[in-house]
Length: 360
Image 1 (cartoon, rainbow, N blue to C red):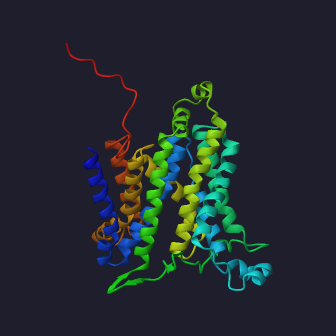
Image 2 (image 1 turned 45 degrees about the vertical axis):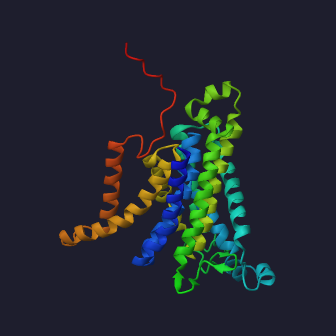
Image 3 (image 1 turned 90 degrees about the vertical axis):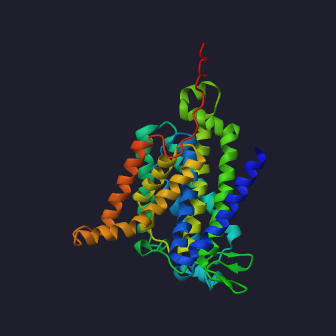
């Protein structure tokens, strides 16, 4: 049994390493789609801690994504030096923070925002919690859109550009890497960075799930009153769930800013937050493989349907807009999947059922 598992893991590892090299034969577009899908996997894993483990419905999760992205944009671009004399004097060429500072800082700041969100919502559950978290996400987006006057911090709706790409062991991920006669494009280099972060996040999530903290979260999810009666500190554990989930969003946001080289408030709308929640629900709430599958499907499906929508639009003589039709096809696919698989594409195994009675 152990040998089979080892062989499966090795084959999966080889497949993940080869995927971008194969997709690269069709251009940088498919690899870029895979890169963004990995970022959504990272976001879905973080939200799964809050929604899947602790049972706290969070509709403002995209706020932590935005915090991480703007933090990296400010620390790795000339924006602050161009708008503040103190920064201009200290950093004439602009701030250029390394990867090793950005990732812990993004995780820490996002965790702080997660605790700030969780603190006022400790007594809320269900629809009320969803409304409060939704409002928090919109507040962050509005702030990002308006923090241009009197101090230009976020550059308002114009966003922040000229963001540095990551440098890893002296290699710039923003440029192609030449290895002999073979060239690895920037999108492929970012793929391996995102893949390493996703693998690390999966390990962390599995360890959390099997730990006492993870079991306490699940007890709160099933019955908070009973968990409190058993001596579980529900207040601290709910704050920890918000903080831990937010760290994933902050790291994913910093990766997104470096990958895109530009951030603006439009990238962190309510639609993004709802899409991340849909990934968790569609894949299977609380089940890591299901969450990964749901994230990959919903991240790649709109891009795949882009080609189908164009053909259908041409069949109707251009009377239907291709982008609207693509959203309609995604919604129909989600409805169909949830009707056929109401617990998700890959739900967690059911526990606690009584053993079947042996036939006499």
